[in-house]
Length: 387
Image (tube, rainbow, N blue to C red; front, top):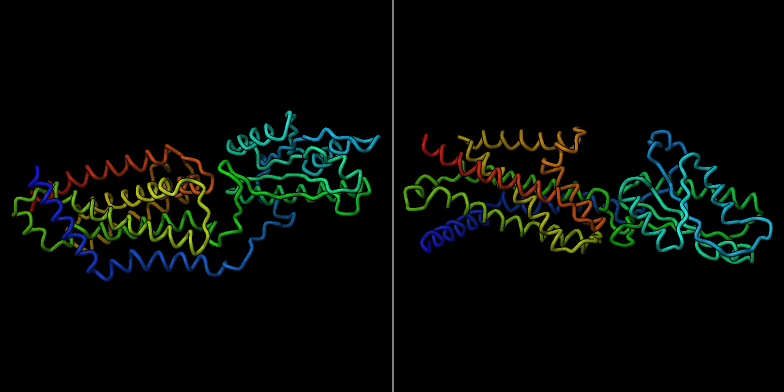
């Protein structure tokens, strides 16, 4: 047992030394993420995303699921003839007909919690809450606040909610002769994990796809060459080192390299480009490590299948392009969740931007890693027997 551990340790050390001596490998691991992050981040560094899109955008938006939740949490009185808070809700329904649903809840807190749940379930695109004291404030000439919340991840929701509420405020002020700034809509992007703003980070929108694709591509590319290009491997197999030990040593070595790359990417994204991460950083790191692990095991399997470096490169291109096609063009969640690119991207979005731990994606990444590790061991054994 001790001899086996010493052999594996020696193999890991050898693999790491070879990787750190390989300048191309270092460029792929370090320079590639740096180029991608700066390329998507620098052009948008001083720009604010345009969330206020004109009405004609609605033409291409699917209105069938574009429900807006309106809550009247105001019980104050002002106008003796009209219930102003209810009148505003009615105008909002006219502007947004038939896509506004009015819910009656006892207070702001329960309304907020209920509607956050509805947003998470995809029933609602946004929440409009007329706060306590709204009518009394605007009737007396003070400021009346309307809280508007929408999902941080759903850009279409932000466009629709902003457009509807802005129109409703304008129409309400015209009908009831409020021409000053009595009504102040407060637009907040909310999430289960807290209030965040997508305008903080210039890499907010492309980050999930870019980070996952860089980790997946770079580790997969290197791991695909790990066995077929190992010149000393034939001599090594004449020693007491077992074939399983060789595969495990390469797996551990590439996992270490992947961990260094992940730490580097997260540091750049969070510190330099202020990427907001709501979940615990260790959990986010664990997710990205799983993506790296999947890349390593798939790469080891492809490398054990290959008879030349050229063939390994062809396998890499075929596998990587297939994952992209299945992620971007296949509309089947049951199949897509088993595609590492899709699962990693979805899990990162939910975890980093919503603070939600999607167990199914973690399980799929873990199972795919295990399956390809077993396939790598079997294929490597058969391949060496055939030589």
